Image 1 (spheres, rainbow, N blue to C red):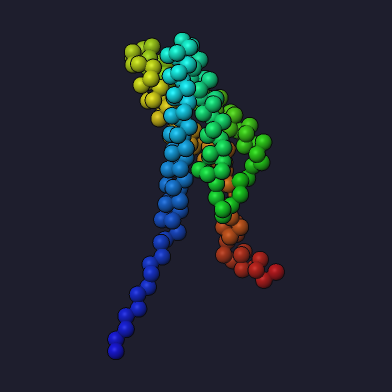
Image 2: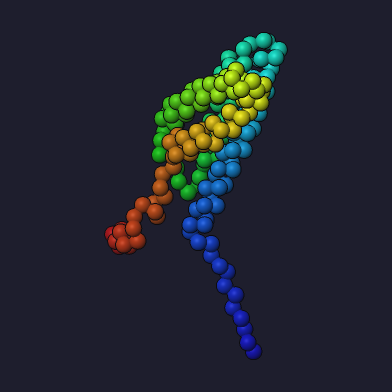
Length: 168
């Protein structure tokens, strides 16, 4: 009788790493979208109903959205069971505060420039600015500066060093 052995192909390390990074990116963007919708709604309410200028409304709404976003990102979007964060909570908060303040400034400036000079409605110019700032600025700084994880122990040493460490 002829038997055929089927071996399950293992996903190459590089490919798994790319898939992991894409999953992290997707979680971070989902988090940004949900928190962004909340702060966008607050901005609309403040501007339309209380007649606060849209740039001030953006600052207030983004602050509320940032508080939500920090928690979601820390405990879900950038969280990993395989490694812990390199920085303490207070260090992460200070770095996140820097990112949020500069992000709010970029969003206010971008929305103002698109509204004042290109004459796009502030609601649409805010969405355009948010997408650009979220992907090009917020994600990069949060992923690689604020919520930077430690390298797992198995990846810290070369194979030769790891074998020597096992013997000890």
